[in-house]
Amino acid sequence: MESMNISLPQPLKQFVDGQISTGRYSSASEYVRELIRADEKRKIGEELEARLLEGLRSPESEWTKADLKAIRSEALARLQARSKAKP
Image (cartoon, rainbow, N blue to C red; front, side, top):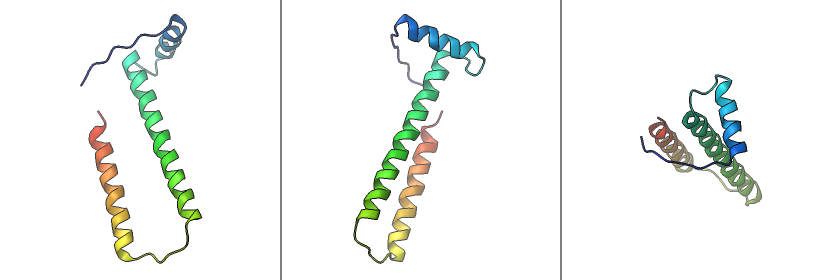
C-alpha cells in the first residue's frame, strides 16, 4: 500500500479525531480511505446520471444484441477493475 501525508488545519484534525473516537474508524487513514471511496462512488453516480440523461435526449434507435453485449462487457470490466482496486 502506498503512503501519503496530508496536512490539516487544527479544526479539521479535531473533527477527524472525533470521528475516530466514535469507534467506527480505527485510524485517520481508514477514515480518509472511506471518504475517498464515497467520493469515487458519487462521481460514478454522476457520470451514470449524465449518460442516462444524454441517452434520454438522443434520438431513439434500435438496440442490437451486439449493443447489449458491449454494454454488459464494459460494465463487467468496470466491476472487475473496481474489485481489484479495493484493498
